[in-house]
Amino acid sequence: MKRLIRVSLILVLVVLVGIQFIPSGTNQNPDVTSDDFVRTFNVPENITALLNVSCYNCHSNNTAYPWYSKVQPIGWLLENHINEGKENLNLSEFGTYSKRKQKSKLKSMISQIEKDEMPMASYTFIHREARLSQDGKRELTSFLNSIRNSLK
Ligand code: HEC
Image (cartoon, rainbow, N blue to C red; front, side):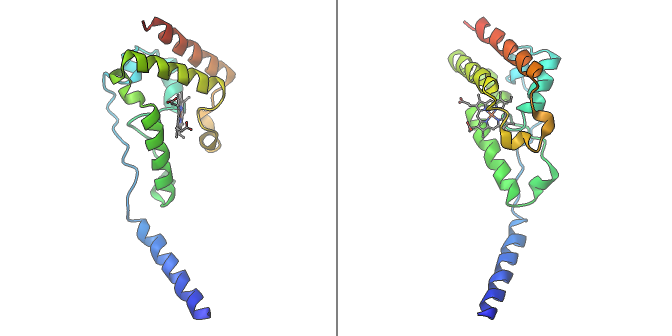
């Protein structure tokens, strides 16, 4: 029995070490193309800054990874979040969306922010700086509303 426990522990250790060599963290394309949300709508700097801090890490093609993203399986979990976030809303490719899709995504962004659903609580728990203040929320949602209304 003791031997079995020892062998199992060694196996777990080997697996834990082994998975460190399987990389994650490939979502790094810093070029801001003309299809990026901020270029599609000529977004002013203060709004761009809010989006960068609170949304872009999960909803764009460029993530600023924390050091612990190199530790597996944490890195894979982060990657999962990013992939899921991007699938729902990719701000780097917003300009490629149809007008109709852009409008519906804008509506959804506004409601997610107003309901405090986004940025995700599990994220702001660690990334305090990503939390939106009341002023930040108001600024951001009123800007998003103005774009939404300008889309015909
Ligand atoms: C930690 C990563 C993360 C951050 C930061 C984040 N999101 Fe998300 N977001 C996700 C994930 C994952 C989903 C999909 C699952 C879900 O809805 O919970 C999602 C879903 C959404 C959706 C739903 C898309 C749809 O089809 O309706 C919207 C809109 C959205 N996010 C907007 C935002 C906005 C705006 C911000 C910044 C204020 C933000 N998110 C910040 C990860 C994130």
